[in-house]
Amino acid sequence: MNNDKIKERKENMKRVTLKEIGKQLNLSPGTISKALNDSHEISAETKKMILAYTQKINYIPNFSAKSLKTGRSNTLAIIVPFISSSFFFDFYEEISLTLSKTNYQLILLQTFNDEKKEKEALELCVQSNIDGIIISPVKNDSSLSLLMYIMDQICPIIIFDRINHQLDTFKIGIQNNKVIYQATEEMIKNGRKNIILLLCKDIGGNASRIKGYRDALFNCSIPYNEQNIVEISYSSPKDDIDEELERKISGLLSSSQPPDALLSTTDTLSLKVLHILNKLAVKIPENMNLIGFSNTPFANSLNPSLTTITQPTRLMADKSVELLLEMLKKRNKKNYFEFETYFLDCKIEHRKSTSVFPG
Image 1 (cartoon, rainbow, N blue to C red):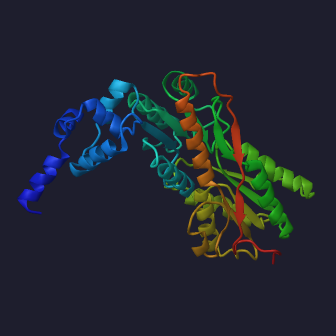
Image 2 (tube, rainbow, N blue to C red):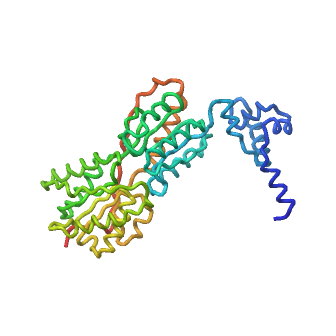
Image 3 (cartoon, one colour):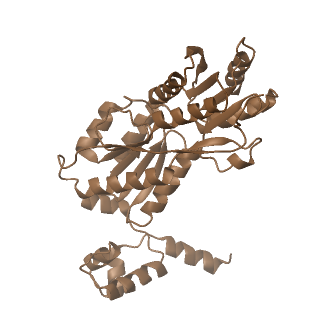
């Protein structure tokens, strides 16, 4: 790149004020501001002219100054345990796409399933004058007092996925009980009787998942065995849990009554379990049916292809944004809303890791 182009780029990157833009276009700073915020007070022709000029000079709005003046940042935050999860990544992407059609910016924060990091993320939202938060909490009562303060004094909050949290607000989740019941029942119909339920420890939806699992066993006259509930503790998909997971699975396989089916409830565990079963030369689906909770786009490419419970990320994202924007419109009417919890249906994507009869 030659020196002239470098100089031009540096000039374009300098912060330009509304006053300077107005001076160039013979318009007031107020008119420029209203046009950039798509105000109905400004004609379409004037908006078009201003937009063309700001694009030409690579104008970047000063959101900090705007926030100080209006008390709003036009920025929303999404807080997730970890973005490396295919579910949370898909959810974030859907939120981003939806908000791209609005005037709101979006920032992403991760807690890594750590309550201290969750608190830090929420404090950053307060310091940054965030207008609204969409969060999947670490635990059912994590950061409760801080969330209550933010909800009452700072901005609206939507809870998604881990909806057993005690905060009183809108919550969007899935029918955990129902879909685990369906998956367990399906394995039983496939001739399986000794089914392992694999969980990530301390996740809010675990109680509902265990209930669905137990109800399916009971209705099919299969005794419940507490040893078949296996919990693994991890704070990130990158955690080294392979050794612990392999040890537990090996122990189950060498028991007097080895499992003939396994139902995994997170995408991280689902992929790791498939790898471990292949490593241990367990024949899938002949000797072991496997269903995973996963939104991974690679499920068809795995060996064997993985039957999965797929969560409706687009519907969850759309509903979260819809409710948050509605709360922002009514931000001065604290008693306007009757908060609800929305339970969305999942679907089971059938692939080669499940079969009709064992053996």
